[in-house]
Length: 503
Image (cartoon, helix red, strand yellow):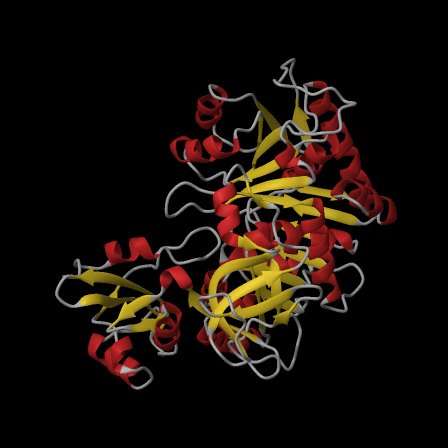
C-alpha cells in the first residue's frame, strides 16, 4: 500500500462488519465508518480541498477525529491535528507556522469558534457528520493537478506541531511512508490476538495517540475506544465495560491509577498490556502498579519526528527494568559522542535514529531540518546507552543537562531516586544559575496522600544513592508537578511551584 488512503481501503474492505471506533455515545463498524468518511470527503472536495490544502483538525479525544482525519486524506488534503484546549491566543503561533486554509472542529465553544472564524473558514463535525455550507476555500487546485501547492508538501500525509514550550513551535512533516512503516514496525513487534480492543486515553493531536493507539489497532481489524477525559474511575470503568485488551497512557496516568483507592471495584483482568509512552516511566510507578493491578506496564520510546516508535518493551517478559526496550524492526539506533562518532556498547552518548520513520523535515524550516537530520539519521536530543543484551536506556534530554561543578547531571536520575521514597507520589527537578555558586539543583516532590514529607529525610535518601554533586540544594513539597499534554515535565515552570522562591 502506497499511502494511507489505499491502506484504509484495505482495512475497511477486509474488516467491514467489525467495530472500528467507539466513544462517548458513538460506535461504528469499519463499513459504517467508511460511509461517514466518504461523505465528509465529498463535502471537502466540493468546497475546494485538493492536494496541498492544509486542514487544521481541532478535536477532543473522540471518534469524529477519525472521520475527519481520513476524510481530509481521501479529499487529497493534509490534516494538521491541533490541541483543542489551546486558547485562541495560544493558537496564533500554530496558525502562523501552519497557515492552514480550513479548520474542522468539534465540541468547541461558540466563543472560540467565532474567534477562529474571523481568521479562517471553519466547519463543524457533529455525530459523525460534517456540517457543510456554501463556502469555498482559496486557493483551490484543479483535480487533475498532481503536484501540491508547495513541493515541500509532496508525499506528506499530515503535519504535527511540537509543543513549542521554548519558543515558536516547529511543524513536523510526516509522510505516508513514515506512518505506514512505523505502524508495520509496531505490529511486527508483537504476536497480536484477533480483534484487539485498544483503550486510547491520549489526545488525538498527539502522534502516540494517532500511530500507536489508532492506526495500529485499525491495521489489524481491532477496535479503538477513545476516552474523552482521563480519570481513574472512568478509565477503569471503560476498560471493564468495553473489555479493552491494550491500554495506552502516559506515566502520570499510571501514577494516578496507583493512588485510586476504589480500584478493586473494577475487574480489568481483560487488559493484557498497559503501554506507557510520551515521557520517562519511573520504576517506582511500575513496581506499585504491579502490586495493585497484578500486571506490568510496558514502556516504549519514541518522538514525533520518528512517527513515533523507536523501541518498545511490549509483552517481553525478559525486559530489563528501567530500559525502554529494543529498537523496533527496521529502525536503527546508534549511540554517538558529541562529534558524531559511534560509541561502544555500554557507553553513554547522544541517541541517533535512522530508518523509514524519520520525518521528512520541519515545515518551512530548512535550517532546523539540517541541524536535526544528517545523512538520513536524526539526532533525537536524548542521551542514552545500550546494555549487553541490546536494551536501550534513557538518561535524559541533552538540553536538560545540568552542569554542576563541571559535572553533567540529568534530572531523570535524581527524580528516579526521589520517586523510590515510599512517601513520594511524584517528583521533578530543575536547576537555577546562581552567580556565586554556578548551576544549582532544586527538587520538587508531591506527597502520597496521607504521608508527611520531611526535607532532611529526603535529602538523606538522596545522599544514600547519589554522588554529592547531584544532591538538590533544596527539596520543596508542592501540590503538583507541571506537565504538558504528553506527560513531559515543564521544568521552566517548576521553580514557580515552590512554596517560596529559591534564592
